[in-house]
Length: 393
Image (cartoon, rainbow, N blue to C red):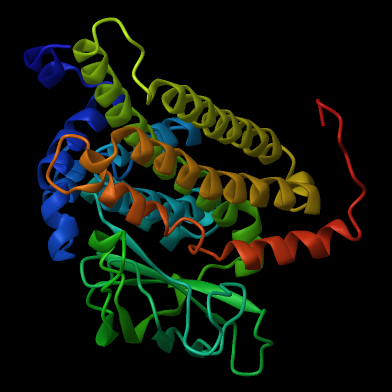
């Protein structure tokens, strides 16, 4: 497509490609400096991509999960940090879309997210619980019409740049660690005292520093539904699926660079098949497996949404866990094969075939909700879950 056509085409994929073009321009600098990809996020807002999930009746575009995952993939091929920010925003937005209509305040805020293109951050981790988002130490305090919360959040996704933070806590001071609620705090309703610096191997531009969070807001901003239901019915599935969309994008760009390298070698080899061609075929095969895994997971989620009981079932949770495990492990195999193909030109920075950033970003995939934790949860459920190994199951 010509540049002129790209500028006037307003399909969702083309809008994502325009954002990706901006993200690609700054991706190496964002990674090198570990800075927030402001240019790419500003482009997302300009293209009005932050509200696409909101129903059209409330000011959005009623974009499907498949469409959102495709945007994650397109941006992920340019800048993984930018794509992950987009994904995490829409993971939090899914909680508003799926459960926000139950409250007039949350409905109004969802409409504002779409109208003003607000960026939503996430604070589910906490000092003392590791990465177990289904437990909290801190507790929300409800005092009449006001709620207050102090949380030692070891990671808040792009916390300093977010327009609002969706944060988890115990439902009250006497509640069990797993009896949680989620609350929306808008910028201006909280303070952030930095406690940890996000200086990481990869995904450096997400700027997910640690903060001591202190917030006070109207009590109506607490979600009415327990976080356990929100997590099971929207958040965990969209986490695994949209993250997988980002990871697919990283791997796809690695394969694209490897393919360009093999083509360049073929042009110089007088009709001989370059040695990297076999690895390229293997990488392409693995990439197709990741794509098929993701598409299957999205179909499973869309089917389950029509049945609340199925959405909260162990079989569904296991299926979503398997999507995350498979995607996060496979992309490293793909990028390693691409590195073998490109050799020293992939290992070096600053070449058209450089893959160092891809490899470093991809290593985060197995750690974002640890694969070991997910496998432990699945193994527990598999002890009591009746197996269903049919192709149509």
